[in-house]
Image (cartoon, rainbow, N blue to C red; front, side, top):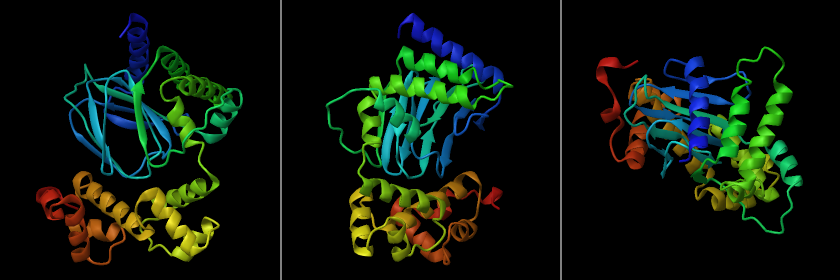
Length: 299
């Protein structure tokens, strides 16, 4: 890592550490821009974050995690681009107040990226990317654009226009960098893919409800049979299987991090039967949910 990149990472770290001295996941004044700081080793289970995003690891040792069943890892000075609509779990390495884990989570907005792409000429055809992720080294131009974004955190002025410009600068450098093909692939999807992704996004917010295939097909402007086929091609699951998986991952998060009892978690995520929840949970995670409970601290 060269001196300029080290200095840029240090500058970003100073801004974050000064503004956020405590452990937490912070929703900033900039829409859908999240900053995370962790001062101690732990496991993190989150139901969803912005489904199309890029996260930059600014400080700390290697971070490992899983999107559903897919594993990933990133090092300091690297970033991860993603458009996966499944829950996230992260294993943090040893860290401290003096050596925290710092990340910046940036949304990838289609309108802004489309505008930037309109100014970039290419003859290459990009393969549509659905439910995938990509890691890469963060270059100095990307970090410089990130620094411009973070300077807006304490602004007392209307930052909307400045944020838009700073995001476009970051997107421009990302599209020309190692994430370029992947990000282009995210936004090169067919109308069919985009409609299915809209339904997936809908399900991520309504997973407690029992999905009605006819209603979901109508949202995708498809016949039920066509919708069922296309949904399976993109997710490798039926809509019912997809919702079940979302419920189970969220149920596990509630048990592990919120200290819910098995019954409370089951009912919270939409199961009518604790027994059925336990059966499905065991099939996915290969152990009974009761084993994940802390009896002394249950709700």
